[in-house]
Image 1: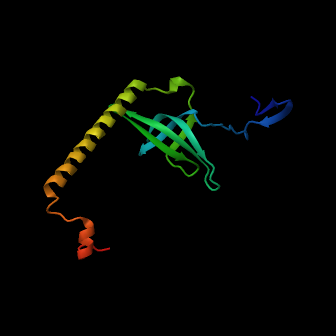
Image 2: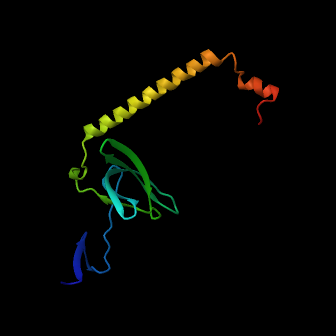
Image 3: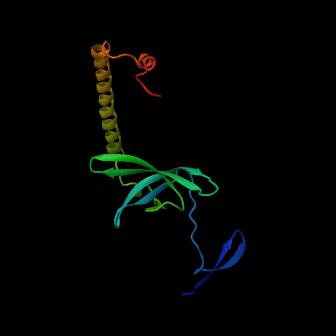
Length: 154
């Protein structure tokens, strides 16, 4: 098999030495990608992702990627700033929707459960704050009064 190949680009014929040829990927915002993330030792996990932006820094241009880490009972949305200094992380173009191996409904259910759990936690904190104000307010001076008396240090 020949190491050289003649290719034509826009009417210009070139002979390319395949030993030195490089495959250049092009990406744009919104492209589906697969990410390979190193976990520990020699264990890697593949996750579906999407390119959400580019940061044209002079010293370290970066691709911003959002990816979904899906486990048995959770779906975590993560982001990474991918550049030449990023270690333990690799990206490749997703071949198609078939590379997105997850159920949107399951992910949405997980987010809804997390939202509800946090709303309950917020309601609990508000109730505790109200309880504190109702039962401890007469025993505790506001911080501004304490400062005047020298109780708080700057």
